[in-house]
Amino acid sequence: MSKNSTHTKMHNLVGYGLIISLPFVLISAAEAVTGGSQGFVNWLGSTSGGVGFMAFFTSALWYSKLEFDEVIMDYFGGKLRSVSLITNRLLASIVWVIAAYTIFRLTLGTA
Image (cartoon, rainbow, N blue to C red; front, side, top):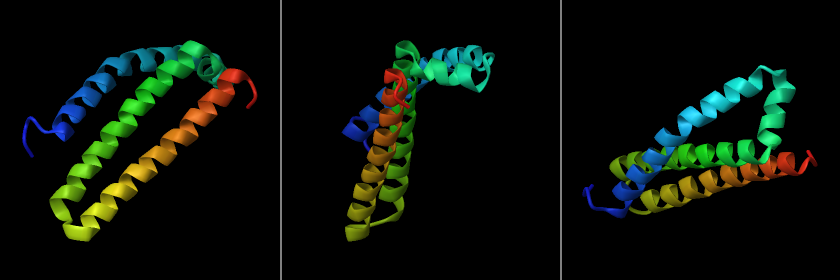
């Protein structure tokens, strides 16, 4: 794969997002856990905790999706490659929507 391809550029950008957000999420989650499970839920329910976690989760999920895209592109061909790439994107999108909905519900206090 070319170093100037869209896939490579996205992979690098998402990787930077993951690296930058990881320390903030780990520190915040570690502080929240001192309050027990309810402290963690309260942290996810806060605006900064929810948005910060979703930023990290989004970059981690997208990074994983891009890695799996590479495996698919290396080992599958033809119609199977197309179907696998679409399925990978669809599953990553479904997981993201579920996580976003859950965090949104926690933030609104309706969970």
